Structures are given as structure tokens and as C-alpha cells.
Length: 198
Image 1: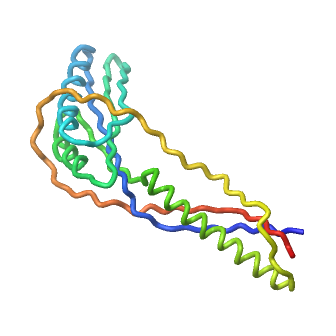
Image 2: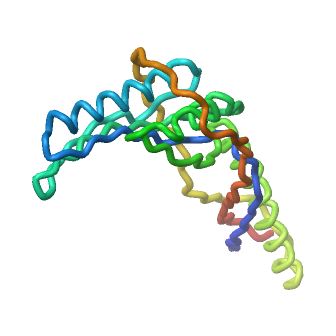
Image 3: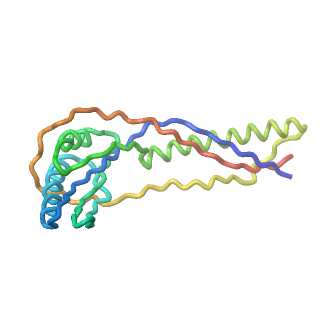
């Protein structure tokens, strides 16, 4: 005989990774002007990015034409873990640059922080499942036996992309001063534990 119980644990954890998205774009009826505007805006952005140690991910370009207007776009993600001065510098210098848009930050947990949080939550979820099983078996006058199986089914893997090469460019002046405060992120884990009944 056995009993299965599910335990859930949740907690708030301070984010340790911030992500900004940078987009340089050109829109014009003349494709050459659209591409030139994109290139000039991208060069300014890369010049600012090159002066920092942030990680650059997901760099790509795209073009499309709507109503005889060419839209030329370059985008990337900028990632910093633990210290955010580089992202603050980028945001403050690119905030007022024409044809450049910066969005974010989006807050996340690094793979190391997420794993540590997950391990603590899984341990607590197992304790919750065990307490529940002990209460139910105890009410029936029985004794909880050994663990027969534990099921979690969660998979938390990080994806890392290579850093791109930065281009030379002039640094625009700071146009925005701000601080970046990490957010609290809520995580939860749930496990189902099967116990034998002694």
C-alpha cells in the first residue's frame, strides 16, 4: 500500500539579472536612406555599448516594406548580472538618441540564483508533502513508510548566446539619470511524493 501527496512551496527572490532591449531603426520611402539611418543609429548604440562590460545577446537585423516605406531595424538584448552600472550608462546615453529605442529593464534570475532558489523550494515542497502524508496516515492509525517515488517534472535550463563585436562610434551625452532597483520575483515548485504505508 502507498499514499501520494503533493507539496507546493513558493517564495520571493531578488532578481540578479537585468535585460535591456535596444533597437535602431530607419523608416523611409527611399530604402537607401532607411538603411543609412539604421546603420548610423546602430553605430551610435554600439559605440555606447562598447564602453561597458554588459553581455550582448540576440543581435539581429530585419527589413520589410509597407505602403512603399522601407522599415530597417537592428535589435539586440543587453544583459547584466549582479551589477547594473553598464546598463544604466547605456540607458542614460541612448535615451534621447534619434532612431534608437531602449526598453526595459526586464528582471530575471541568473541560472545560479534560479537553481539555488529551486533547490530550496523543492526541499520545502517535499517537507510539505511529507507532513500532509503523516497527518493523513496518523489519522488512520498507521505509520508512514519509506519514499517510493518523487515526481517534479520541472526543467529550468538557461540559454546563452555569444557576445557580438562592438563597432566604433561617438558617445552621445547622458540625457537621463536613473537607478536600477532589482525586482522581487515569485517562484514556486510542486512535487508529488509517493510513500509506503507501514
